[in-house]
Structures are given as C-alpha cells and as structure tokens.
Length: 97
Image (cartoon, rainbow, N blue to C red; front, side, top):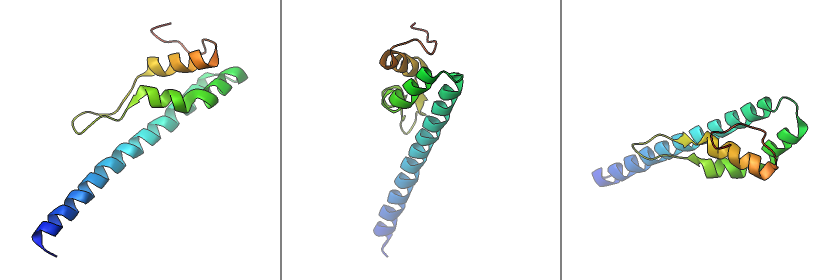
C-alpha cells in the first residue's frame, strides 16, 4: 500500500471514529433524557403519552450535534416547550412558560 493510500485510509478511519462518537453521544443523551422525562411524569398517563408520542420530533428540534470544536448541546427549554405544546398541556416547567 502506498503512502498516499495509507494517509487516505487513516483519514477515513479518523472521520469515521469522530462521527461514530458524535452519533453514540446523541443516541445515549436521547435515551437518558427520554427516560428522565417519563420518570418526571410521575405515573401521569397523559404526560407519559405526550413524551412517548412527541419526544423524537422535539428532540430533533432541540439537540445540536456540535462540530469539530464544539460539543453537542441540548436546549432543554426548547425540548419541554415543544412537548408541552404538542401534548396540549404544561407537563414540564420551562423558562419560557
């Protein structure tokens, strides 16, 4: 294998590891936050249904993957405001409510 091909292969591996790490962190955060919100519903069925039905779409709106020099970020207020709005009730507190 030539020197140029090795460099390209190493570049592909590094980019793959970087993107894999970002995706893993997003998935882990998504699962943990959803579990915490359902736990916070304290057995209120309507609240749990709102989280279950609207979490994925609201999470996509409120989570930023970050970049090479910035970390990922979840905008909690945006997330709970979205769930509250789509669920039709104030299940969670936010700074905007």
